[in-house]
Image 1 (cartoon, rainbow, N blue to C red):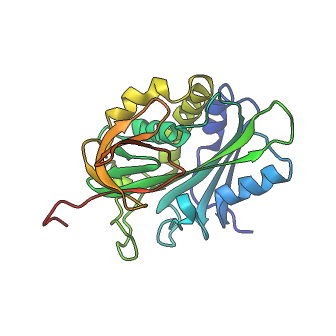
Image 2 (image 1 turned 60 degrees about the vertical axis):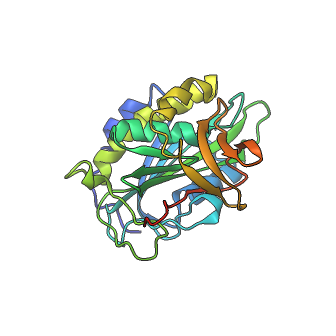
Length: 265
C-alpha cells in the first residue's frame, strides 16, 4: 500500500487531541474509498474507539443525500478529506452538522458563510461540505458512534461537473495546504462536538446566525416549496416563511438551494 506523501503534523495533533478525546487514534492513509465509509465499517465490526482518519485521496467520497464528493482533481493535497469518529451521547442529535460547520468555519476564516445544513460557502461558491453518520456502539447506555466527515477544497478545482462552481481555501489563505488546514480545524472541532454533546445546538445558534448564508434569502426546498429563510431555531431547524405560513424544516427532510435573483446568474 502506498505511503502518505504529505507532511502531516501527527504528533502535534495527538498532543492537542489527547486531553479532549482520551485514547484518540490519528491515522493518515494515502488513498481510500471514503474515510466515512471506513469508520462506519469499523463501527459495525465493533471498533468504536475515537479516531481521526485522514485520506490524501478519496476514490468514492460521499456527501449528504448520497451525492458524490470530489477529493481534489486527482492531486494529493488538492483537498482535505477526513473523518472524526467517536462515541456520543447527546440529549438531542438535532443540529450536529450545523455545530460542526460552525467549528470549521470559525477555525478557518471570518468571511466563510454557512449554508444550512452542512455546507461552507465563500462568495457564492461551495468551499467545504460535511456528512454526519451514526452507528450503534453495541454497548447499552453508550449512545451511538458518530462519524463526522469533512471535505475542504484547498487548491483550485475545475468547475465542470459541479452544480455550483467550487471555491478553494487558498483563495482566502494563500499558501495554506491540507496538513496546515487540518491542524487549524482538529482541536476546535473536537471541542465543539464535546460541547454539543453537553448542551446541544442552542448555545451555538447566535454564532451560527452571524454566518448564516440563507437568512433573508429566497429559497426553494427540494419538495418544491418556495419561501424566504428566516434563520435557524434552537434545535438547528431551518425556518422558512412560505405562502402557507412559517415552516420549520429538519435537515433530514429536504435539501435547500438559494434562488437566483431575477436576471442573475
